[in-house]
Length: 245
Ligand code: HPA
Image (cartoon, rainbow, N blue to C red; front, side, top):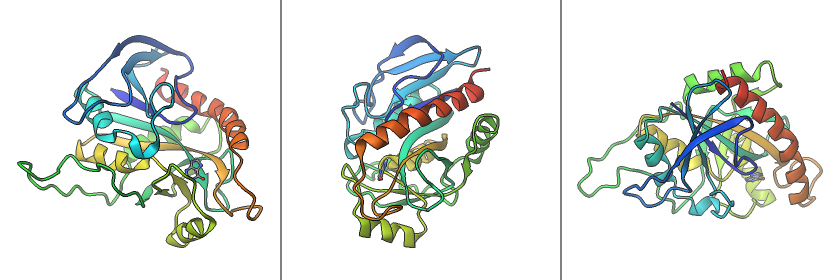
C-alpha cells in the first residue's frame, strides 16, 4: 500500500475518496494527525498524512517524524511518496519546477533521527548510498511524463528551519552541490530506510532560495503561495496518474 505524506499546500488529494480515518498510537508519541485511508478513482487503497498536521500547526523541526513513519509502517504501508515544497538553489530549479531528487545532504540538528537509539536496541547503521527508492522515483517520473516536464535527480539539502536561509548559507549549499533546499526531507528519508520502506519525494520549487536569481530581494511569502497554488495542480494530476488507476 502507498502512503502520501503531504507537505505545505497539500492537505488533501484531488479526487480522493476517503473511506476511514485512523488514529495510530506509537512508542514515539503522536503522529502529525490521523491517517486517512481512501482511493483516488479506481486506484488501490492508499493512506494520506498531512505532515504539518491538518491545520498546518507543526513547524518542520517539531514534526514527530518517528511517529509518522512508525504509524505508516504499522498499518501496512510499503511505499511512501513525500510531497514537499523547496527553494531552488541551482539556477535551473526556478519557481514552478518539479524535482524528483536522488541525493540528500542533512544540515538539520537536534531532531530525533533514528529508531535505533541505543539502550536495549542493537546499533544498526542503515545504508544510505542511494537515499531514495529507485522504484518509487521511477513510478513518479513515469506518471509525470504525460503531465509536465520534471527534473529527474538533484541534491536535496535539508535545513533546520523554520526560518529561511541567509544568502551566505545558500552559497555554501550551492558549493556543496545542493540543487534544492527544504526543511522536512530529513530525518524522514532515513527513518523510512530504517523501517525498510520505499521512499521518494516529489519536490515543488516555490521560490528562488535566498540571494539566487534577482540578487538580494527578499523572498515573498505571497509569491510562494501563488506559485504553490499553481504548481499543485500539476502535482494532483501526477498523483492521479500514478495512483488513480
Ligand atoms: N528554503 C527552505 N525551505 C523552503 C524554501 C526555502 O527557500 N522554500 C520552500 N521551502
